[in-house]
Structures are given as C-alpha cells and as structure tokens.
Image (tube, rainbow over all chains, first blue to last red; front, side):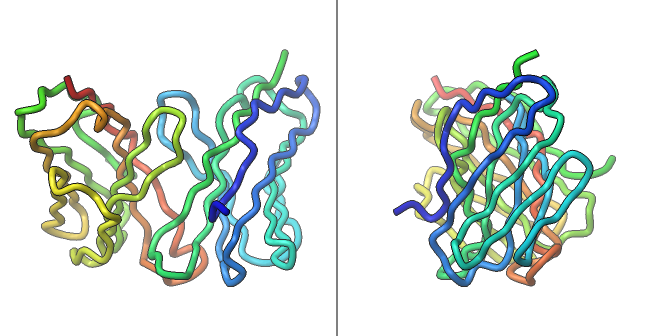
Length: 112
Length: 117
C-alpha cells in the first residue's frame, strides 16, 4: 500500500461546478496535511494546510480531514479553467521520515 | 528577492560533466530539502537538511552530492550523471523540521529542469 494515494485522473468538471479531490494515507499518527497545486512545468504551490478533523475553508477552497478514516479531501467551488492543474496531497508521515510524503497527484481539467 | 530561488532554471549536461544546482531561501527557515520530479512520477525526496546538518539521505546515488554551507543556501553537486537522471529538481524550505503544524509547511523554489545527454 502506498503511503499517500490519489487518483491520477484526469478529473474533468465543467466551469462553475464543484471539483472534489481525494487522498488517503496509511500512517494513523499523521498530524499535518497539505494540498499543493502544480501547473505543468512549474513547481508546487501551497493551497491549504489542515491539522484537525473537520473542514477548513479558504475562499473557494475547502479542505476536509477525517483522521479515523485516514482521508483528506479538497473541494474547489465555482471551478475556473485557471484551476486546471495537478493537485498534490502531502502528509507528514511520522514513522521514520522527516519530510512530507507526496501523493502522485490528481490532474484536474475544468472545461469552459 | 523573496521566497525560494533556484539557479540555473535549465541545465543540459553530458554524462561526464560536473555541474552544481543552487538554492537560496529568503524566508529565515531552518530546514531545506531537495526533491526530484520525473515525468509522471510522484515527488521523490532526496535530501533533508536541518540547521545545516544533513538529517536524511533517501537512498540517493553518490553521483548526487548535497552541500549546505548555511541555513539559507543549499547546493546539489552533480557528476557522471545518467540520462535517467533527467528531471525537474526542486528545492524547498520549511521553518523547522518535525515541529508540527505550520512550521512544517514547505515552500518550493521554481526548480531546475535538467537534461542529461
């Protein structure tokens, strides 16, 4: 089992719709979770971080964390074509690692 | 200049060349990282430095040699690379290492696109 798993996509949604991106992780004691956005040929940029169970909202973005289910998600409301990118889930895996572990990313396509 | 910078942005080298990648962070962070990103693969952690001390070497071949002379600068020295080493090399920094919460948030530089011929 991969430590951080994401569906590679592409996830295609129409402009204005809600895009839902999901991520599962293997380490039960993980405490810090991050979503990064990466445009093609560019470096990852931080969108949101979440540390406790529940929802965290920032503008059009909502991160949701469920530690019991080892599941973290990112919702993008009112999706725009400019949101088309690869979204990387990153988890601070505590066991034997001192840096973030990244999923392989989900490619999102927002259709105009 | 702000954030994390990397030079060069693009590099083409032969297998017998020696080159170095440079990273500089202007955020006052204590931890710095090198990652490799190959096409259609997840980000691979290569090295981690905390307060100029290497704390993790993630089974990276010896043809990659990191150097961290101070907490603001990180280098990756390259020699006798192979074509499969062609990738995007990303530098990142965070406030601290394993400190919990916001201090673990990593900020990335723009990357160096490396092509080994």
